[in-house]
Figure 1 (spheres, one colour):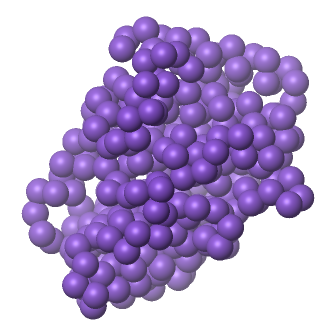
Figure 2: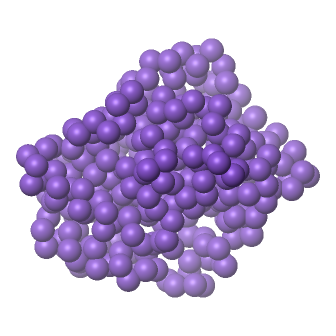
Length: 296
């Protein structure tokens, strides 16, 4: 990581430009790749597809205090697709919630960084996730708690297609549409691939936006590119454009983003990264990072 990016991390603020955020996401993606290969465990595909989204949230959007993770007025974030934990851990560590020195211990006995995030073990994790489909229920509860407590924080929930295959997600959608809690934002990491195949093969979801609207949710007029920082920041502006709740945003993403031969392949959902694939893939990730750092 170059001096410019290291300087941005030291600021610990939320004002990154699109180019800075893109470079940070590339650096975090490379770090995730290294950790997953070293540990020979974890989920590369869905962690990589969400890299830009979580980077933009924590370095441009969320009102949080890493030195005080339990701050009552903080914005909340729930990673419903908890198997992408290495993504969340990397961003939280680099945002200052805990030392990045913890990352190499991912999924080792005694480490706080287990395969799925635990709110009791990891500073900055607002809700423990793992079983798909629970996240939106928790986020809706957080948003309602804000209303009852007279708070103005936002509650963000990130889900993937696996969560959308679960009935609890749709029940939570109905619940949120009825009570309309302010500040509830659902972010869909729509990478079109799951563990056993494409989402189209397993359980077709289209027309997804129309289904959300039919359930009483407020959506923008377009899907956003979940790997384009300018587009992601534009989606944030849309979130602030009116006071209609709940809101949902669909982000088109790519499973395994950043490594050409892994992109869009369900085989890389959670498979260990072998040495040959690591060497080839890492070269691509390094080249991408160097390109984005060079643009700063």
